[in-house]
Image (cartoon, rainbow, N blue to C red; front, side, top):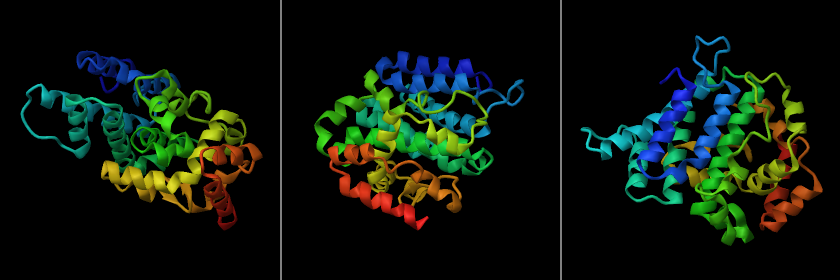
Length: 279
């Protein structure tokens, strides 16, 4: 199973099918299939080996949920991590907020545990890792703390980010923002330049002005020190300080300020943009 990308998909499908929570698996399976298509989960012996980092983080997510499933089914022992406890709570009493908390605790735990492996990846890949993390934190907040995540649009946030709905793909889907290839051979400045306006609006108009607060929320909710994965208003997971200015490249567009204002974060966007001069 570990060396079979298709086997990983079957395991996740079985988890959600056997627990009668199939709709909750929609976003996770979509992301997992994107990983498989990129080849990042390929075994080391494959003609095109995968990524040790992506494989390890995915394994943490799979292990946590299966352990919780087995514990509730009567297997002996106690949960090996707080993230396993969160999956057990979700299985006992499912809700969108509990799903995000369990899922993000496993993912963020994998990020922290395997940070040394992240540094072995090219800069473009590490940029994408940071984008993936900030988006799942934001999606969680949209359900659990909608005013923090969406400001004036809080009333609609919970429904839009519900993991059982197709709309959650707008927030977690990286297929339309980054190339489906591994390893990435696109220079980072080119990768950023081709990012679509919708993805850019989300990442820089909505999330960037709230970044520090979102990571603080995640740290408290997940009981993990993920707030250290930002610095000076920008993501900093496996990220060199001298590369900090790249997060501001091309992000002073008028429409981004309008998006920020629409969600009540106009002043936050201005403060965030001012940080570009500190890099």
